[in-house]
Amino acid sequence: MKFVMFSDLHLDAQFGALGLEEQAARVRRQALRDTLERIITLAGEVKADALLCGGDLYEQERYSPDTAAFVQATFRNIQPLPVYIAPGNHDWLGPASLYRRMAWSPNVRIFKGSALEAVTLAEGLTLWGAAHHAPANTGGFLDGFRVDRGGLHLALFHGAEQGWPLLDEEDKAPHAPFCAEQIGQAGLDHAFLGHYHRPRDAERHTYPGNPAPLTFGEDGERGAVIATIHPDGTVLRQRHTVSTVQAHDLIVDVTGCASQQDVRARLAEATLTLRGTARVTLTGELATGVDLRPRDLVNAAPWLEALVVRLGNVRAGYDLESIRGEPTVRGQFVRDILNAVEISEEQRRRILLTGLRALDGRIDLEAL
Image (cartoon, rainbow, N blue to C red):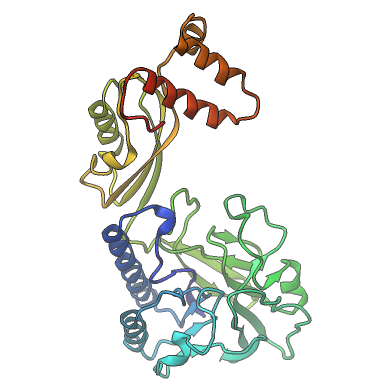
């Protein structure tokens, strides 16, 4: 059999981590809907036998009636293709859940049990699924679980693999935790999972990753997974990009820029070939007279849907060693701050820049 599997779409996401203005965030939320439609189209193109969702299809705290109607109609329109959903910690199955409030078409099966329950997909092939019933503190679905029949067995749930160094997801809470070896011990041939946004193809389990960008700095081949189940239980996986947008993360060196206009030109040059959204981190040494404020730069690349600018290691070109040797108020100020041990290096930098600007008679005292 062949499945198309996805997870962590997060319809109605706020996109706070992207730092987008409200209109840009609305555009991105529409792009999430477009992504779901492309997943549906992919399922039709590959003649999938079912569509699997590993949870966090939407965000319970934010979903709108319009989103509910959109999802309901989207799945109804692909009948008779079966849709199997295992609710996660963001779309958890509670009294106010979209899953309970909507009347779903017969092709939609939402796993509602707090323990893995079985659905027969074909003779000798069983899918086990379960739901989160709260936004936190869900126990491991594989703890104490063992299949009770013969044939091939697949699982679909939203859970956190333990012991995997996730780097950018170290702060992800261990919702429904499990260890990789539990999959085989439970008698399962493969588990299709949601929760971690970084894609992962392990021997017995698959994380497809979020199919559309939710923040900057994401890596790995995210998208929908076409999974073909062979009679011996092995799984052939193919990943397909389904997002309609891109999120770029880049560093721009502004060393030598003598004005804000110079900085804008650097931003334009760095992003000219990009589309979608971009977050630019500025670094380098600026002339002391530059009045640089990130919010003034967000329109420097009008071909992008949104541009987010933040200050990295940007320094004003004051020669601190030369100034500290001056027999002046300015020199004493620099000496005092450089010798202060109770402040951090970042605080020291900002105090020095703000103070030196004030001593220069400037009114733009905001530190870079």
